[in-house]
Length: 350
Ligand SMILES: Cc1cc2nc3c(=O)[nH]c(=O)nc-3n(C[C@H](O)[C@H](O)[C@H](O)COP(=O)(O)OP(=O)(O)OC[C@H]3O[C@@H](n4cnc5c(N)ncnc54)[C@H](O)[C@@H]3O)c2cc1C
Image (cartoon, rainbow, N blue to C red; front, side, top):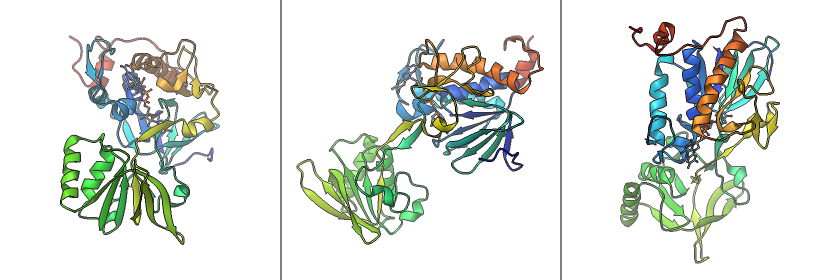
């Protein structure tokens, strides 16, 4: 990526990569110091692992909250950072990061958004979540054309013969949404039990009983290719019986898995797929780039939300010092600091 100044880029004092719990709390800590930020996540929603992997599970080790649902924690963090009006850029992965001669950073996302950032906080957790792919020969050839792992535009599937693979909420939600709009739908899932919401499963079974769609138990075993087109797939049942299904479009929803992805190419010192940082300000081997939460490593590191919150606080002071080296730093309490209360939009102290 070019190291020149890009006039069309979104200018920000700090760019946060990752909107998991730790990235969200960094918005708060930066906000208290009067630093504005933008935040990017490859997922379509904030929340990281809490939202993606265990939204309904209770967490018991958040200070002062004896029990808190994982999604509830994210909702509370979003509420807490509201006063700071961070810019959210969701559904895009931070792909490139380059230092400029003036010490600022050019950042580019997978959808083409450019940032001109004074500093960067990487709060990328386990890495960006990627869809699990269909593991059959030649699947890659059709990805984005006739094989899809997410629906970008539902209208693309109108009037088509669809094969949908998977048993979670995404598979069931799209099956129900597209039934009646597609010419035909076959849902294939490897077992009889579904992970999706019971109400969605019940509705799907009603549609099958009414002859409006087909359900197969099995896995996609091979693709049927005619010329340069995907014409269908071969499904292998648990009894090893093979069924041929004709389809024009195949949608596979096998869930997401985290991958370090482009971060590995940013020239940062890494240790076992984690970013090495100091423990004074959680700065990486590159001045001005900080790493907090599950993505970093240092002696004694524990991958806990609590640790990430502490790291966010100290990294924010590190950011402040990097972008305003002459500014005197001092600790203020939200209880008593008029300027912090003003930033929070609450009444001044009595
Ligand atoms: C089942 C389960 C239960 C858990 N229970 C607890 C518990 O009780 N207590 C506790 O303290 N911890 C618990 N944890 C761990 C806790 O969830 C993590 O420590 C926490 O989520 C880390 O937060 P984070 O913000 O660092 O990263 P994450 O939550 O992983 O968020 C990182 C975000 O960065 C995004 N991202 C990554 N790379 C990029 C990129 N290049 N561009 C754009 N976006 C990117 C990802 O999409 C993701 O949304 C649990 C974890 C699991 C899986």
